[in-house]
Length: 531
Figure (cartoon, rainbow, N blue to C red):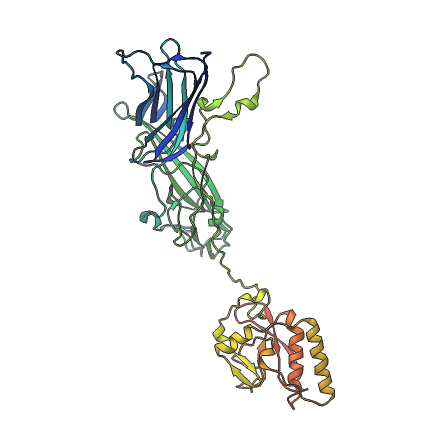
């Protein structure tokens, strides 16, 4: 075929869903006029199962096919078997023949490659030449199916399981081992983290922990004979281990969700293909130092083709990736898709043998980490009050309604005073320096310095027990906790108030223990009185 220079088959895209239209073009470039019966297109999708068995000492190969798409189309020329018309002549030049065909609306199984079974979709184009061998071209494409949405109501329902085991049957003082696992939802896409919560009650004498394993189950069938043939393959495609729970303790484990990510794998395919069935389970193992299999829970997991979507939030970024090597469908590459070479007794170019012509891809989303939830512990230090305007004082652990501003012996708790207090700006070091000098001069001159309430950059909280030990605070006793940036301003404010009161009271520091923690926080007792 010296006259045929180019013969290509191109598709507009390589990933399709059921019901979409596959579009592409066939490009033919010939240098001379050619007699061609026609350019024929064959679109096919089928499942194939095959493996070897031994029957009565004889080795046999069992195989079966199941067709989903089988369409033929004539792009140019005359129909096959038409002898009434003459053979058409294709003039020399470059010819482009576009084509399109619609995929069926029915549920189509996803593209899948395995050693024992495959699901493939391809387009074959044939250049029918009457006087020579007919050149052919094959193009494989991927079908994403079946249609499984994580927003389906049955996949949004939680699933849970409980496993219990008694560590001792006699009265030896040992309690049972109890594990309770709960899935927030059962539908996930590749790339998402499995939302799992596990509760453990360890009544034994040894540490206990949980091992989570996401298992893939693939079943192959050949419906021949009286009973038919079947084969099952299992893989652990994801695994995570929790922290240890001490003996005679209980704990709720949330960290497993961050460690358990769904790898790229084929979606769940049940009752869609008669030759291949795919489903997934999440198995929780409760292990101890004495027993590696104390309890076990199996939870169903569905791998979907449409990700979970939060209302009024951006749609997850969907892309397509090749399956992981640890899953069935990613650990096998057929020889048909490997670009190799014939061994001629010389050095072999191994880089050329690594070229893969086609591999199926699956829906994958980028995992979005949920907002972290702060959990207080006994040894943590909690900052209850912050200076307005500081970087750490953006949020406080107490509501604004519990704050009371106390200036000149009067208590203001209205929203107006609180909002005015939040707008107070810390003065610069030069301004504070000049204020201190003016305060010092006023004290030496015997004058009285009056301060405005909105200039005091302190946040005060009313305490149930005043510092002076009396039933009421007397209009002067209150506690504040401020940052280091407002220390100088607080001293300046106390000194300013000292010049206006005839009573002498120093600024004292008290250390009290927080009622909900184990660490003391520093409390400042500021008495607005004169020195």
